[in-house]
Image (cartoon, rainbow, N blue to C red; front, side):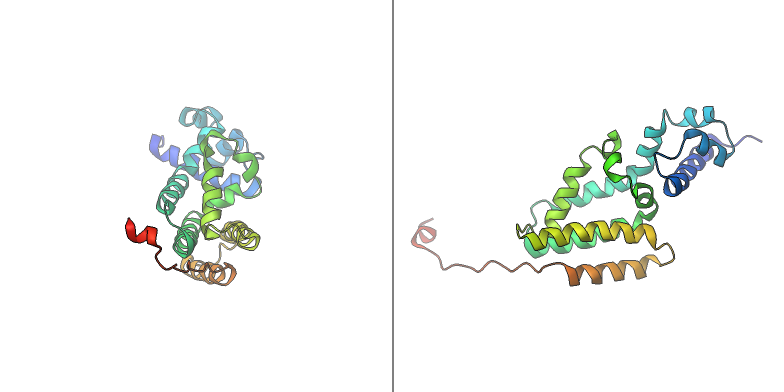
Length: 195
């Protein structure tokens, strides 16, 4: 009996995710994916125009959540930005472990794919928020290392439950992020009083 079109579509996505995570995006062919599903390459191409389209659909949910996080960070500064960036990114990374494993080792190259348009700018804003929008080198370096480390940990530790991984990552972030000091309020000037 022939499989339903939507069932085959989902099987192709799942097989692609598994293959990309093991052999990388570059190291996986459409024929590899077809072989794992038990269908022809033509069937894969019926569902997806090319490997880039398959990657785009596979990553779309994670990219959507990343864009939502970017929107949430707009206008936040200091400790509020740090907290929102840390919790938001840890939640995203834990939720989309499989997708992060797909990107592992190939992120710079994959950023050139149309599915990843604007992701570098979002990543930069996320790093800045995690640094509390500080220009201090220590804060910026810590933020970048944390983002990379969170991604790597989520891809690496499949044996750790989501709750335990989330707790461990948030504890690490709290220890590693340089706290942002609240600005010291200045006494009102005569200009402030006149406005």
